[in-house]
Image 1 (cartoon, helix red, strand yellow):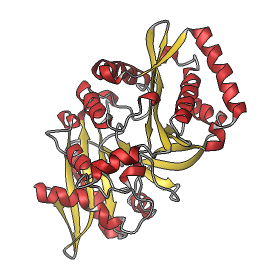
Image 2 (cartoon, rainbow, N blue to C red; image 1 turned 60 degrees about the horizontal axis):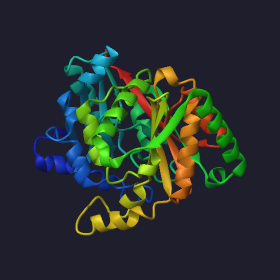
Image 3 (cartoon, rainbow, N blue to C red; image 1 turned 45 degrees about the vertical axis):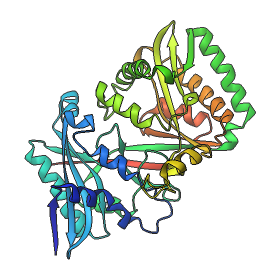
Image 4 (cartoon, rainbow, N blue to C red; image 1 turned 60 degrees about the vertical axis):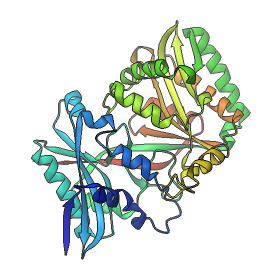
Length: 375
C-alpha cells in the first residue's frame, strides 16, 4: 500500500531532508548535502526565495516505510517575468518503484494545477537559480559543487509519467593537459591582450572587504547579462545577499572577477573550488568535527567549477569571456587547481559552447529539465 502525506511539522521536514541517505546508501559518487544548509534553504522564514514563492513538500510511504519525496513549487517571480503559468517540481527522490514515482509526480502536478497553473517544469531545487536538472549522462563520477546527482532510473520514471525534455544543460570538463598546454595559453594570452586594447577592457578581482557593494555590482550585471537566457528568473536583492552569505566561506577571491569597459561594469565571472571534495567526507554534519574538516579540507581542493560567466548584452560581442577564461586558468594554476568543470551551459548557447570547445573542453555530463502540460 502506497500513500502520500504532506510535510506538516519539523519531524516530517527532517524525514524529507534525510531521505536521500536511504536512496544513496553505498553509492560512491553521491555527495551528502549539509543537513543544516538544506534545512535553511527549505525554511520560508530564512530563505528570501519564499517571499515571492511557495512550496509544498510531500513524502511517499510504501507499506509504512518511507519510499520517496517531492516538492511542488509556485514561483511568482518566474510567472511575472515569463508571463506564463508554469509551476515546478523538485527535490525528487524515489525508490525504484514506478507506482511510487507516479504517485509523487501526480501529487506535484495536482498541487501545481490547483494553484491555477497549466504547466509543470523540473527538477529544480527550488528554482533555476539553484541546483537544477536531472543527470541523464555522466554517472561515472561525483557531481561538483552545487550540481545534482541521481540514480539512472529516475529518467525513465519521469519520462514514463509523460514529461518531455524542455532543455538539456551541459557540464564541460577542462582536463589538466589543456590548462598546462603552452600553445593554448599563448593563444589565449594574445587574444586577451588584443581584446583589452581594442575594447578598453579591464578586469579585477572581487574585494571581499567591501562585499556589500561588490554584491550590488554582481546583481546589476547578473540580472542584465542573463535576462534573455532560457529559464532565467531575476534574483531579488535579498536573494543575492542570502547567496553571498551562503557562499562566503567557500569563495576563492582570486576566482571571482569583474570586467569593465571604458570604466563601466560590463561582466562578471565566478568560479568556486569544488567544495564537494570536502562535503563527501562530512556525511551532512557540521558537528562534532565538520568545521575542522572544512578548514583543513578546503586547502586540499584541486578542482574548480566555472559557475557563472556573463557579460551585459551591449558588450557581448567583445569576446570578454576569453579574457575571463585566461585569468581564471592563470589564477587557478597559481592556487593549485589541476582541472575544472564549466557548468551548466544551455545546449543552444552556441557562443559559450564554442568558446569552451576551442579551449579543449568537452561535454562529460548532461542534465535535463523536463516539462509537462497540465491542460
